[in-house]
Length: 193
Image 1 (cartoon, rainbow, N blue to C red):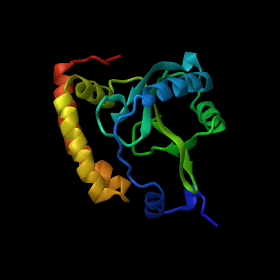
Image 2: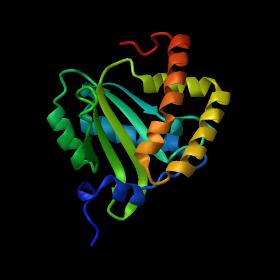
Image 3: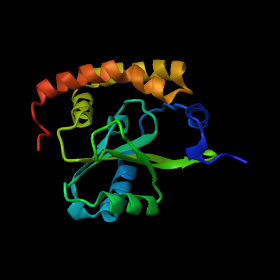
């Protein structure tokens, strides 16, 4: 019998959910829009200040993990306990993020005890802010040559860290930080609230 996901070690989960890199799919935008509509109903329009499709699946021609990342910025008065309950009832797995500023929460869909099933979503929930992910995404959209460089890095790292998600993520950190710094200079205060 397969262990429940929350009882598995990181290594067991990494084996079950390896890093997969594939070519860009235009279907990802459509899937984002469908999931966005679900999230808006589940969390409530009045609680959301901004919602964005983030990550590599937003960038045409960029190879990506086939995971749709969504950043949901909530208003300060949002009942986060109710939000967690509602997201779980909508089929999401709640993943607390204690190392990030509150109320940073992550919700995932598409993970089962047998591996990936259906479209994978990562929904990042935070209070409104001037978030790096928005700048990074926009910079890649404006600079296809940088997106291509990032794609090459991802393919290289996938070979090295296929069964180590933390290693894969950490190895991209310097590249992402450097590009985000350039993006913040170029798009000064674009997402400042």
